[in-house]
Amino acid sequence: VGSEMCIETGVNVDKFYSILLDPPMVARLQAVSVQTVRAYIKDGAIPKHPDSTDSRTYIRASVALKLDFSELRKGRY
Image (cartoon, rainbow, N blue to C red; front, side, top):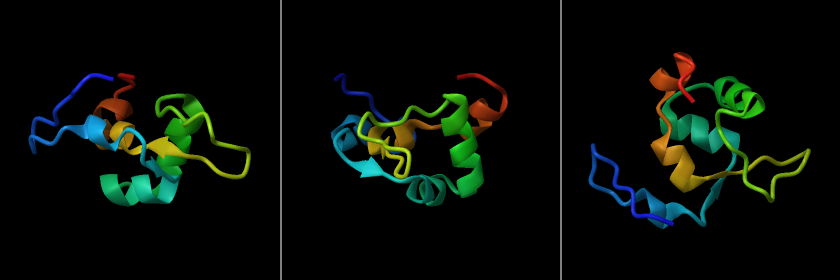
């Protein structure tokens, strides 16, 4: 795993690689609706963690912190 820094904050987001978030937590983190997060997960724009099941979906925090919904809306994923 590389050491990708978040430009805005200088935080090494890869330190959050092992932390799992559910779609409502990602939605709160990114200030979007849960439906938006679930739609991008369904489309494959947001990768699910391998431990996700049919009833529980998980996203790595390191992925959630790097999400740019303005780019996702433009279809750049």
